[in-house]
Length: 169
Image (cartoon, rainbow, N blue to C red; front, side, top):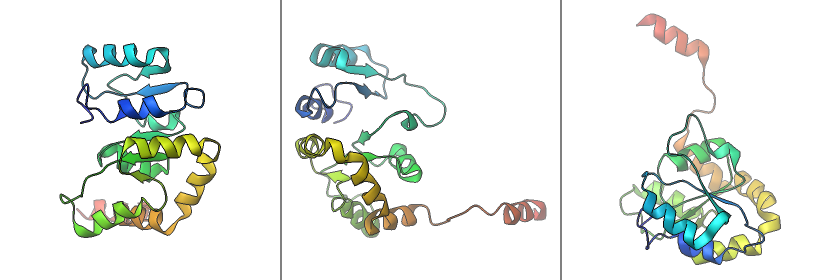
């Protein structure tokens, strides 16, 4: 749904976000189609700025919070860098292995995963002044650490071991 012009979850989310608290929003489309941009500009005006399609490195370091709606590269990058993010996903997660699905669902406990855009908008509006302190608590939580350790099991890259391995080939 995220690529659909009218069934997109982000449109109702932005409509519900407090216009004063969230006055400047950045949107990244993964297809370079001018029609969705025109629709968004008409609905939200100067409140929305579109990001370029291509980029080098992480774009997420430039923004306070990021909202995603799937478990793609962005999810892993945000998790790796511990960058504040929220996920809108009401899937039953059948496509994933049981352990990974359980770890994802546990993100609801720490207010990272939300079933729908209205639930997320309410949380963001009600907690605007606490987002960063809440995020620091989330990163230190058991649920966040379990997910991160599952995805990134190696804590530190061992240069010496890598060089020995390369030299032995």
